[in-house]
Image 1 (cartoon, rainbow, N blue to C red):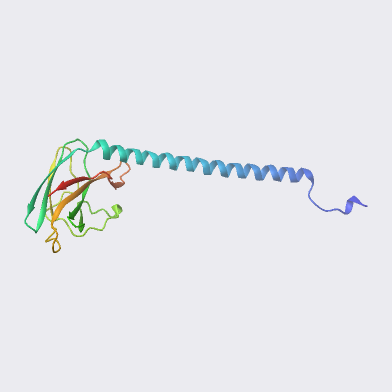
Image 2 (cartoon, one colour):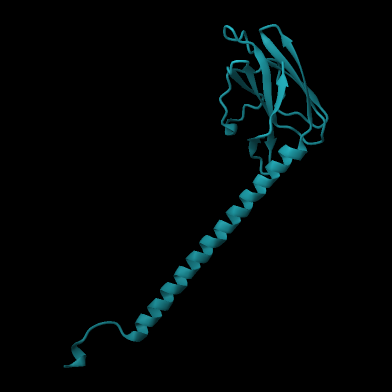
Length: 173
């Protein structure tokens, strides 16, 4: 057989191509890993900041007045130096009917309220401040009474992102 008729790439060129592909692949994997690490640490930082803010950063004292069947008035006193961005109120009857109200209308919270809170509503509650929220619950369905309101603060992270705290306080009315 004559070796001059064989066609193909030389072993040297094949080795160079394999090394080149390996370097490109390694660079892509390193870039992906770095991005994954940065994203994970950023998200972990946000989650820990949010958890810390909601569990230890807020100290709110609530009081209420029930105005017949028309509304429930809630006064919130911020007993801490952290500003509260807003509140989520869920009024409940003894049979489980609920109405939801949000003092911060930010669409990023992804909450669809039952109705607006009446009164001029402060969007945030500064350090050691107090505000009154009037929830226009109206008459409860037949055979039911409004008996509690669950309140959850809205936290704003350093990044500007807003989240509703998971720990709620139930006010018996």
